[in-house]
Length: 381
Image (cartoon, helix red, strand yellow):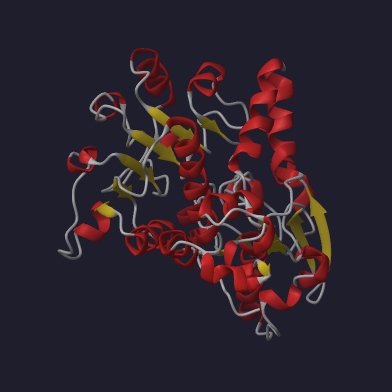
């Protein structure tokens, strides 16, 4: 059996080699000719998989190590008899930590009091629900908008108009271009113009959830707005003018924690084993090599959540690296965008961080401890 795997999928080669011959390849470069003797295809979001890609190939299983599936032609693949699986929730924690890290940076730079703000979350799937739980544990007021879920139950949902009352709006929806609840340009020109004064807008979902040209034009007139974009229309070449105007710009890496990527690999491996009638032994944590462990010495940082998060994950590093591409040609920018993702640094999630000098924890202010505990910090080492 031959299995083609995106080269950006950590630990995929040792895992899938248990089941067959593994070939690793850059996801954006996967073409039909690569699949003529391939039985299974494992991808990430940069690979568009449809019937044309798989035509006259033996591929009968496609796994994507991502939450989202908008890069897959699900109905057509199912009709062609191809089993398709994804990895729901694999990087939800990483995206939540990205959002919190971004707001900590904005608090330092622009004085945004995110802990006292009213938040609006659009999309209460794995990421949105987890973010809501963290924010409510900290004590934030949260407005929740999810039209598909609202149609199923009355649980205090608000609509897209009401979400505009929030000080900070974070988007976490899948990209749907059609159907009862389309999300393509959900944040369109008309909706964007109604953002409240000094609002913060975060998009860590999919680039086309926000009308990028409309947002670019709006920011020229609304310097009061603060925008965080991890995803862009036209990836891997984001709008140059929009990049210059937003406060935090990153190359689609919100969910790129090492933990999240390994969980994604493990989830589709488990499902592929099930497809083959095989047994998946162990778990994702057992796969992590010792050299990937990270620790924070509480005796060497200030007793606040921002200092801890900066030691664990500083979104500013990703912003700086992407902004450096503004001096390049568009062709070079696209190549660099992909390289920043391919060569992404080791980033562990808060719950996997090892602590040293844990006794210092008792001296931390309770409100600072509450933030990190909400993010999953484990004191038992």
